[in-house]
Length: 461
Image 1 (cartoon, rainbow, N blue to C red):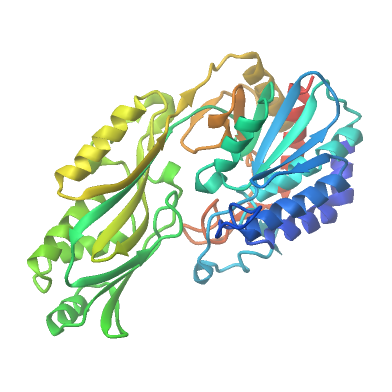
Image 2: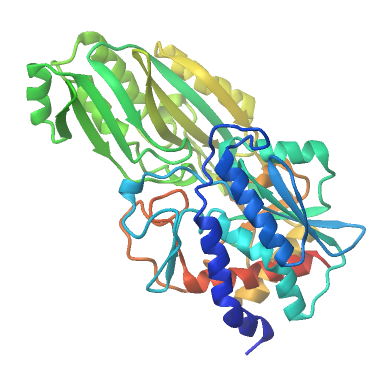
């Protein structure tokens, strides 16, 4: 038995206890407070990790937006960038344990953040211990960043970049195996309908970057609408003076939603053709159905595929009412080699040509790094050594990570999913990052400590 395997077996329950402690903090973005721009719970998460970091031998500095932990010495620096904020949860959709309690069951760990990205925080916390156990010393100073708004705009990393020099090389364990060398352009828009009369309420979704899995649409209570809905196959009920229609669909991350659709699509498609609704509402819902028609962005003129980046995707994550108008929030992932500004204009024009308006739009351009750099070769060598695989190649990613804000930064696996392990017995749309019942294999999670150690040791030479 090698020293790291022995060390992980000896400290397994300490690791799980620390993971449970930060999983228990519902670090979803909240109302800003003094010293806590992302809310009290996010700040409490940062404070908790700071205390744990000191226990593991780090020098810690806590800022309002993020935490910095440093270990070792060296003229050059090696950064490890993780985040402790998480996307919201709908507790009614969780079937295995509560979202903010670590649940160990049948060889799996479940809880919000075990994959994205609290599990990686614990891996980073234990790096000084793992280095000592392995008898390794880094020639670079290790700088660990724990952010508080990765899921909600990345104001944390923007603040870091304003205040500090960037590390000479960085990794962010918030992606897939083995290493990403580029990320798609991420574009968020809010499309607003014309006025509605019979539709009086729309509420669905928990985050822009997760395909909406449940939506409730409320309508005026009229006999023709009720009669039509009873024949629709949709879930319907009377509630507080109106009619509610409920629709569900699999929750899928925006980076992988090309073959999926929003829970809003079946409702919009039905009412677009329903004579019980007034003509104006039918027209507005027909536009909604067209915009929601697929997860590739066809209706917006941006469907397509680009070699290494794969298909462009279009995710409807949130639906809401603003007065008497419906708002649909979309997250687009467009090839990192494309013109981000041109894509944004194409999407804007497609929305405005329907008669809807773009109520909000932001985007962050994608990027591409050389596939044959010294850093990439080193990361791949570490991944091959720890996994036993050969011929590994870098890839381009659909997700957005801190790497997009840093120089010479690469996103790597948050979980060592290269092990041939069984999948958790969960329903479709459950178990992955951002989904209900977020779950990781217990063995793969412990292997992730070995994986991060291997990458850090290689880059820290």
